[in-house]
Figure 1 (spheres, rainbow, N blue to C red):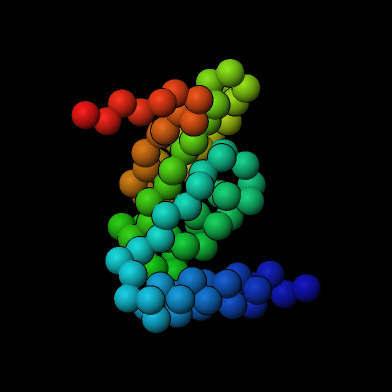
Figure 2: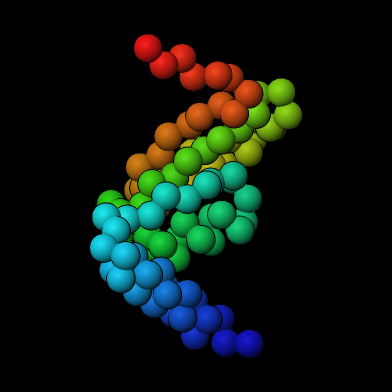
Length: 94
């Protein structure tokens, strides 16, 4: 398995799809796990970190603090904008 080739293929796909849809960027769920970290890395490398937004969506009652910290660290290291939205807290809209 050629990981460099696979990574390049995924990055080409992200770039092509973003461009063909005339999108300003992508929004990704960042859990702090390896799968979302790899996707965030490939997206940032493919289209630029300024075009990637990470959503961290923990549930306070079950999500370990270490997962939230890892998700924040991923966004920080990759220099992608992020927002944390607790899924178990209703957002008040006025």
